[in-house]
Length: 154
Image (cartoon, rainbow, N blue to C red; front, side, top):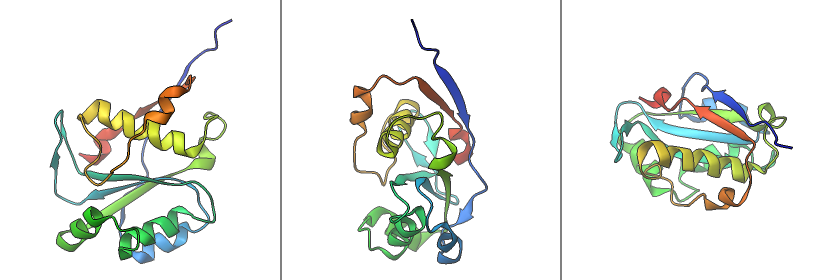
């Protein structure tokens, strides 16, 4: 018996300026977050995008809020994000993992890998400030696929 594969469209929420006042309310939320520039388009091999980084918070105690504050203040040691923030306004958006749990049976780390690999499929390389691969997800049989609105970052 074959399981039916589902396809879920992913649309991103309103962009928020990458500032502490907008990050602090996200304490206690686990999920994925996306940091992007206001006006700089990165020339990826297949297309251009303002997306700089895809990150995740795997648990509420290390929430999206605390991860983003780490990037904002440089504590995360992501030199790329720190330097982009020095030269222009950055924005972020996020996806609350609780919203996808009923359709995604794997770990949040696998969801991040899925998004990163989907970005690679569309743009040719990892987002410019990401430095890890997402191959672990390839070991799983995925029944849920996401149609991700990468045009949000155009």
